[in-house]
Length: 137
Image (cartoon, rainbow, N blue to C red):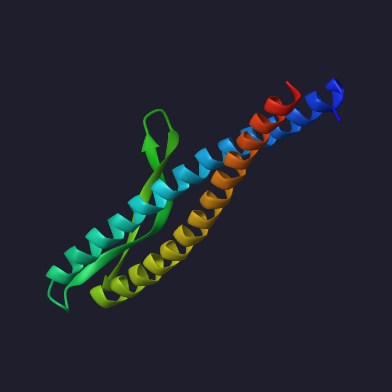
């Protein structure tokens, strides 16, 4: 029993849109994975540097940015964005970084699952389109 051309075209269009969406999302997920891996590597390097310091070494930890006014000539003010740091111990920084590393590991695991799902969806969509074209076309 042959599928009418209109239905076949509609089915192919649906499968094609699913494949395109999966491919687009896969690109986004791959970018997120690369970003998380860079972040993880930065934390590892930072941890290695912190291990080389004596235990009681004071360090400065970034806490955000602050807006400040800078006087300009002709009675105007311009805003500056200045980084803000707070004095802390190496232990506190290492604890925070260990928590961040654990969070990144969990996020990477979730992204890997999502990547696998999207790859499977994309491959299945491609396979279905090929089967339809072989049978109907």
